[in-house]
Length: 334
View 1 (cartoon, rainbow, N blue to C red):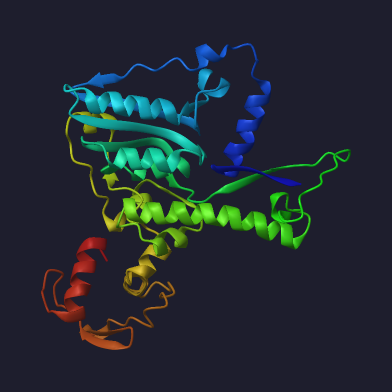
View 2: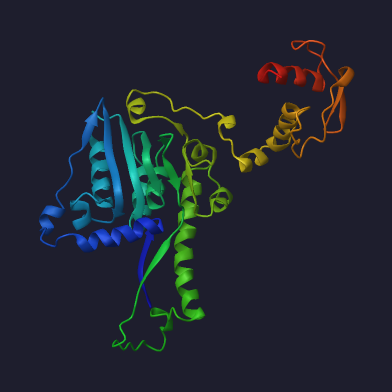
């Protein structure tokens, strides 16, 4: 095995599909037709730039057949939009799993330096290298079903032919590391980790709310819709039409994120257990961990080891746990 020095910011399943598609495409397309520039699409004084499929540094047979987007094309369209006095805002419309790392950092910096407001809209996916570009925009708005994240780098290796004989110069043993050994893998791993370090550092600078600790906590995983907003990967939920009409992205309510991990992070787990115990009182439902028992005989009761006075009416405000009980009864009809 040899390290090909090609690195991709792309989920594994998408990378495998990419190679399969490339192998099936015809090789009869001329180079000149593959590098034909795209036309800038504008609407309501806003430029819309599509970022679809796998990302490549330059146009190739895959971008020609619609399986990807060239970073060079995005750069050209961004430059055109920036110089057009009729364009007041630039919208990048993402549906991409990522792609080649080469050129992404440069383009992200160019997007960040734009002299006009930029918005990233994600309808399907903005993962890995594609998310890097989205993070460079002033705002990220996503559909409720959009997928964001997959922050990491994949190194691609190719197998050596058994008939190949390589002689590496004495002072460059790491030029062709033997990946069948721990030492060789360590060299290759260091290359991938170095690229990831640049990726993570760039994201934390592009989006201050997305700290390096929060990125590392994702572990290369993705988040969907409201959970992506909660994780700091996006600014809000919305639609492309809403962006074009100047609507503000909506912030999902934290209560909509019914996730044990998020509940625990916000200290909601104990309160949720108490509510569960209250609703199950007297019916043989086992209380949650946060509540030991509920007894309501003779107008008094216990909740989590604390005694309270039961309100005489559902609407009575007694403060403390009594007021909470009254509210829960009104909400849940118990």
